Image: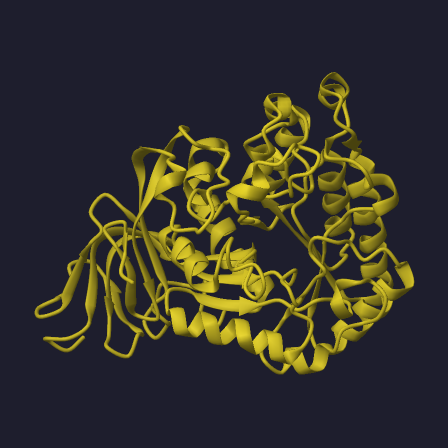
Length: 432
């Protein structure tokens, strides 16, 4: 690095898919990493202190609800990007259940332009599987793929028609797209608001059985095998789903899976308060399901930790449990929840679940998630794995406050986030 320019991240422990080492990271003015090694000469460069910290590729979230267009009162691309940066994310994939839905090039472009204008995170857009997310006809994949869309999903709805989903997979395979599925059979889930089990019976709240998810997981695995397409199974929540994916992978089926932080940290017992903060879709499950999700993350069955960051205004989230919409915030707590709750996983495993593994699924490995190495784009996260803090929803960068972890003590805090060489977070403070 030439004297008098660039940035140097000094004194950290670098973890990426190539291993772990003590090293400084020097970044040039062009946003590229120019050197990685101990005791680099940073004369004249801006220095970011990483003492006692871990330096990793910037995190990648496969499942973020940014609400724009249509529900900007709950979140905008800008406010969601700021929350993402504070959480250590350099890239997020925006879900398509907006108003209007992201089912054509025009809406994709709107989301991408808003992300670029915010400049806080690399916002990528998913595209709907079906027009209007109505489950009736395929959306125009080609025009969305031309804008860089790789993941297609009707998230919030599962595609119910098997024949239509088969055609979606066949079409998507021709353009190397990933068909992602919200796994839920409507006829089994309809009218339910939490997990079907002992707690739903005790609370008198209609439940959603595990089978509503597992039947669609099994169906889409079968369709992936039939078509040769890649299917990505979103927010797995049950032990049965994890077993199905484990078996499918062993058989060579092209499938990947994600799990959210709330599905490995919370159970349906949380709903005993009748607080809609704990209402999500798929619902919080039982202890054995949580244990299975953790095991799936540990053994590689589940490929990525996703947030399913789902902002809602206080007005709608304070409705009665059966009327309130499902969803909770997740971007700013994902790292700490993983570090606090996934004690059986190594730090390297957790970093992989947040970085290079989701980046590969999203087709972003050319600039995100890859090795922290010379010539790579400087998309980085620096976090202190030992910093203790207490969750305070009032301090969130999101426009919404529907965080169920208020008052919870966690460990692990992002210190700096760097996007294409520019710090978006310094010492825990967003720079825009």
